[in-house]
Length: 276
Image 1 (cartoon, rainbow, N blue to C red):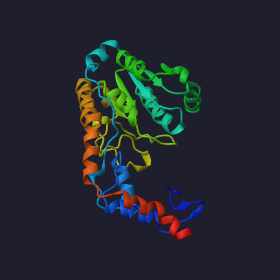
Image 2 (spheres, rainbow, N blue to C red):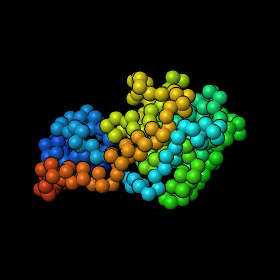
Image 3 (tube, helix red, strand yellow):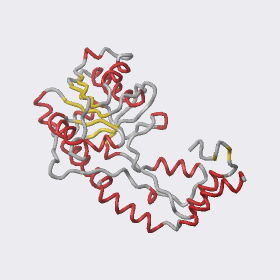
Image 4 (tube, helix red, strand yellow):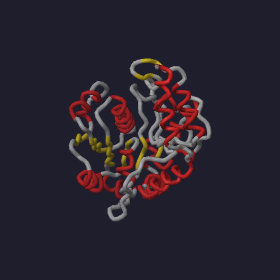
């Protein structure tokens, strides 16, 4: 988007403004979360509200749905967390924060990390803590049915951002949303359940979080009713991200738009009128 004003390496005056104006007038833009709507409005866009939000589609399981409950976790004496993430710094830092909080509270836990590179994930984590002190298992090459089976068999509470959070919730696993940052999380940071997400924002930059009101300490999460969170995580996934729900929203968006091929052609040729 930062290069959107350029064609053939030449900056085109007002092109971005023109695009935003036409998309607004023709009701021809949608976003996967409300954060996109806010950015669009910042750029001068208008006429876009919650109707412009079409969440990430995901297959929500019915036959493989499970339920987790606090009694089972308490009897085992150790809670098993699952985290799905690529091994990049801004996605590793949320895992670091959760591990630190669990350790600080003296909570017995096991942490299964599904990632593309165990070595890279360990390298980043090891800068901040001695991972040998914790029961952390790194798992590579898990996707599709293999990932689902592992989650169903092993995970009590899921922790992830974006589409990855739906891997847990779509199966009925109580799911905490992970926010993200390139830096260490603040000590006062608190957590929220997936079903507490607002406007489809399934993961926030911690620099954009102005208040932790309504969020939960990890100790509060663990004494809460996990069977309730299991059901509500599943319902959130089903009501907001199920493929059929998202498809119907896309159909409604096509009915609202007034954009046609001539409008698209005018955008395509606008830069060349100025260059030539």
